[in-house]
Length: 499
Image 1 (cartoon, one colour):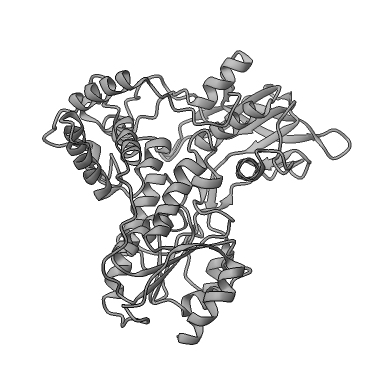
Image 2 (image 1 turned 90 degrees about the horizontal axis):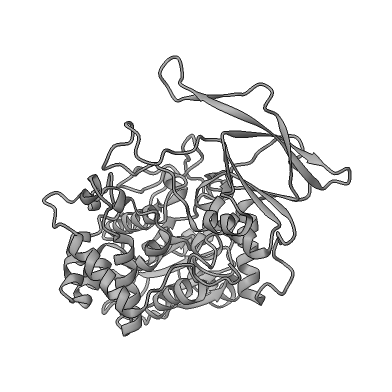
């Protein structure tokens, strides 16, 4: 809790080998392995029984090949995925499931350690250009797939580093930014993918120019519009969106080791995190490391049961009570689990000078809807109370992509403001423009983002089969990472003239 290194346990080599041997042996070679079922298990359809068997046999290089066949970034999913595959493991019917996530990350980490992960640029280029907007897991997966197919790929990211939420959303203690995320980006650049940073498409950068310079365009901009809590006192100093807090911390950490004063510090403050889930946990863990005096996590929903409810049978993802790293750290530091369930925030309280000094909350009870439908909550009379707070972090999820890109490009959106594109086709209302990831399906998991990126890449590749090359296929393709300002001066103008 005193540093920003990864929290994942690293066992001594002999114990780690014994763990992997045991877990790979526990995989039962099921007749119907639900772990790779895309509906209840892994959205990527990872060939889990196959690479488990190969690890047990000591055939690690072949296990890596099997793993990379379906998953572009197992070092991401092996660290941050909630592992729906484990929830649907057949062994989990009557005992603990196979630790699939541990097996996955162990295979890819060994591959990097052994030097097996080296640049493999495509032997043949098609001369067709694809632009991708968004450098998160969906955009990266699409870029990786299309580059492997021989297309010339340029990926635009509005932040100053590539990775999306894997870079600036997920904190460093869950996934090391330089040792894990940047390492993968560098590998893709060496394989020929061109990354353009600080390129806010739809604002500083005209998306029509991007489309004009490409044979196809993929929108993978994520769902970055956070859900707000518009109650009294929302504008007080000290109330922040969770992602504002997390992104500022990671950027300051990478830029200066938190010495530049640009992080939103929780040091010496009583922090209230509103909303559970992974983002809420990350806010807790970050606040603990800052040196907060106390951290409280408010959740509107009831506390999950210790075991599966009758309405949540195997092989569906188990909605049960869990203790994540942030909860364990807060409990160790402050003496109790930080979570308070079934509470609603009524207002933020002003200290008289525009600063937050507390919250009014009320307990709620969940009741089944009379006409069937979803349950509803009612406030418990007389349960209103005030709690102190110097900082509030809103971790209540995301509503969809920001409207600027859709408006600038003119693509249709669905009622939830996502880019309208049918799953499996990924084609938007504009010819040659595709959408993938959270900006198409809504807020979801990293593993779903990778699956969507791969699907959109396949749809784009199929579309490009009917498109004449816009460049000479013999022209050398050189990848790299370059800021938009420099790229626009050196490269973009030449492409538009050529078009």
